[in-house]
Length: 299
Image (tube, helix red, strand yellow):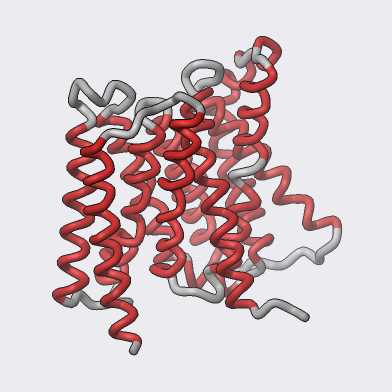
């Protein structure tokens, strides 16, 4: 019995958010210590580009309309390059727990952009949720300069927040484009374009990376984040955008801090701070208000 497409979309979202949650502690473990952020960005995009070409072995090449090519290049620069740069440099400078929590502001940012482009309208409940969530995010960024948050950095947290902004922009602005073409076609264009852009910038640092000096644990973590999180989860994300709304898609980011916190503490990379948990609850409450208002409007 075939699984309905709407359920498949939700299963896809569940999987890719769990994978992305693993990114936070694993990237934090290796970035800046064993491989530079620029080298990691370049390597992961090259791997993703190669993976994006493999579906051509069994599917017919799909033609992209001339009018859409510039849009796809914009999507590549946004999701493939800008998001990667902000995320990698952010995680190399801050706590994996803070980073994962700040990423949950994506639904609030999706709402803000949806209002700007006229897809949604503000209500009192949505506005209250947006303000509440942003207060929590700002509080985490500001508190990261405190002496008790030895693993955190305001600059790193700000970069993670910028990465969330980029993700929200992609979900809102390119939803129609995602629905128009096969997911494999779209990602092939995005990742091949991104790899071409990043190779001249990061090839030197990638070549200088000494993979032979990494022990088994570090090598596994490096190979995992190089191969797993980039292409497959984004394939599933783009698939899910065909069947569910951008706001619903972004709600699954709730899973990321839960999984990231458990892994980070288990790996000894970070500690749980009471104020961080409180600020996280403020963000979650804000997202909850926005989601509740949206569901109420549908009803």
